[in-house]
Amino acid sequence: MPFVDEFRALAGRFSGQLEFDAPLSRVAYYRIGGPASVLATPRSLEDLTLLHEAVLLTGCRVFILGWGSNLLFPDEGYPGLVVRMKHLFTGVEETGPGRIRVGGSLGASSLLKIAAERGYGGLERLTGIPGSVGGMVTMNAGTHLGEIGSILVSTETVSFGSGSPVLEKKIRIHVDSDFSYRKNHFLGPSDLILHAEMVFKPEDPARIKATIDELYQRRKATQPVDLPSCGSVFMNPKSAGLHAWQVVEKLGLKGHRIGDAQISEKHGNFIVNLGSAKASDVRALILLVRERARTELGIELQEEVRILT
Ligand SMILES: Cc1cc2nc3c(=O)[nH]c(=O)nc-3n(C[C@H](O)[C@H](O)[C@H](O)COP(=O)(O)OP(=O)(O)OC[C@H]3O[C@@H](n4cnc5c(N)ncnc54)[C@H](O)[C@@H]3O)c2cc1C
Image (cartoon, rainbow, N blue to C red; front, top):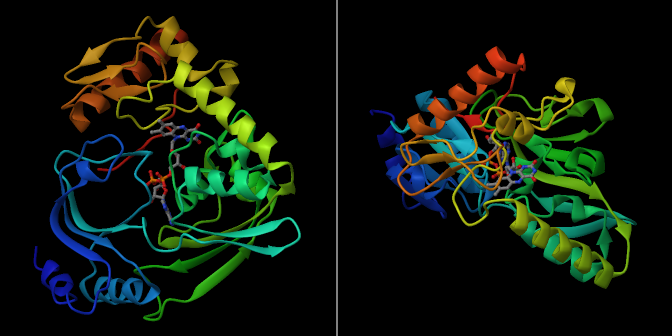
């Protein structure tokens, strides 16, 4: 791919990591996916600026990767630049009474550890979600305790790979209509989340830790956490008054297998990778469930997992 040379030329000035023809299976929770032409892991805003300039120059395709826990990459790979947001901004600082500013690259488990140490109540809702803050805001991730959108005050973003040659930071103060179930309604296709500001309720650290520990135990008992997956494959079809796992159970598809992809025996809304599953196997299972839910139960299932083509 001719655009790749432009990224090779960044070596020496780029403080993070630049990899070429890098297997995406290595960076996706699913352990599935062919190579990305360029996989860049920036470590500073200067790195991000170098990538931005190279994208403007080459016009190559760009994908922003968080921790890769809600993604199915294609077997053929990605013919463009994947920007991996694992190590960019990971700090947590108090910005006022009951408010914290969190780096978009920080993982939920690290954030929860800090919440349990410092007594930041209300963040327990993120327990067991293996994503980054940026990924969780994009997906409005949540659990039965609530979603991230309802504790979010503001986000700091840059428009990456389009528009002005300079990366301009934009702060957005959030309103309720910015989020709905597993969706945000404010990010543009090239918006990249650098930081998020959230509210918390000061609470006893020991109580917060106990809640988090209990929620982790419950997850272990009910979800196949020991096998690669993307978490819930389908959103719950709320109009049908059912959870997606109940739909799969009604169809008798628990345990159904195509290649090395299997609808989990433990949780009907998880498709797990038993070892060498391909994206095409997972997609075939998704199509099968959707088709049978539509024809046999009259239910339209929508994917929660983001499938790249
Ligand atoms: C075992 C397991 C359990 C799970 N449980 C839950 C659960 O209980 N609740 C739930 O809601 N989800 C759950 N998930 C799904 C997943 O963890 C969430 O969707 C999470 O929010 C994804 O975050 P990520 O950083 O991994 O994002 P990725 O999967 O890397 O990306 C998801 C989307 O966010 C975008 N994105 C990521 N970072 C940024 C950024 N900094 N700026 C702009 N865009 C960005 C990507 O482009 C992509 O469109 C689970 C997944 C697994 C594997």
